[in-house]
Length: 174
Picture (cartoon, rainbow, N blue to C red):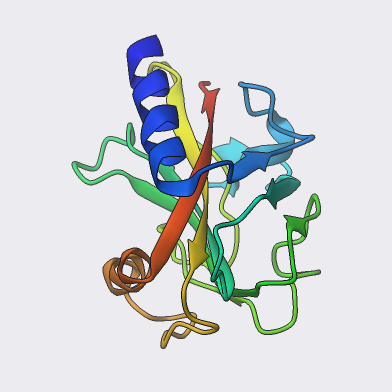
């Protein structure tokens, strides 16, 4: 597991120089604050505080994603996708999803079928899942997507315009 974390960090640094993502809310383990409320879970479903710095030159906007590769779906689980965050924005506050997003930002429908942040909700008794929080520096001001655009299309658009990315990984089990 440690080798995987080092590899993810090294790849991010190769592509992004000093581009970094940090959080006051994430310290390796998610809490009930970031647990989904529904689907058998009873958390607060609050999107965590995220802040980033040293974006690559030429950055015109940002995207943020949260992905669980350990979800028992065969394809993982998208908990949050936000695009078209203006280049002048370098943070999202705790609970910003659906309430205090930067003007122009678009939250994509997550794998729960809801717009905005959908917190962790791994099956009871499953090993702790990894939640990968990633900020992408993009070379365009706006991606041509809407809240209901299919997530693979959004992912394609993000990857096609990425100048650099930075990630954090937190774990959660029930």
